[in-house]
Image (cartoon, rainbow, N blue to C red; front, side, top):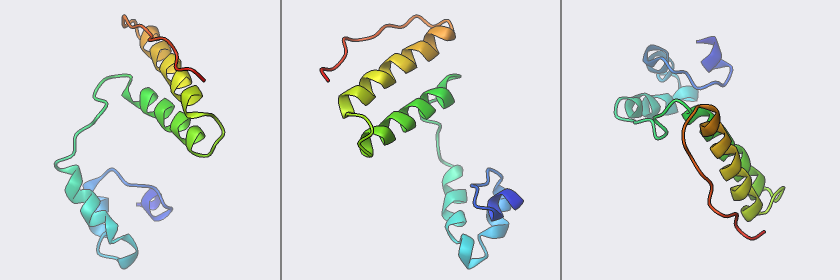
Length: 98
């Protein structure tokens, strides 16, 4: 409850239900409803690490900190490394021209 009241997104449906009755947290009802039918897009063990890499590099490209090609190339290398550390057989396509 305290986590949600401090601005975090709660993961417990009872917290979402209770707080959604307050106007400040009205969005939580829709979020709670969607949790019942939502699916994890990256449904594999490395998913959270891959998602973090994708989010970081896309944001760097969006704010101009890195070109889009550089961001995608960096992302590809980092994701390959995550999978390689997990023992997965993987590869890497040729980099995009930067």
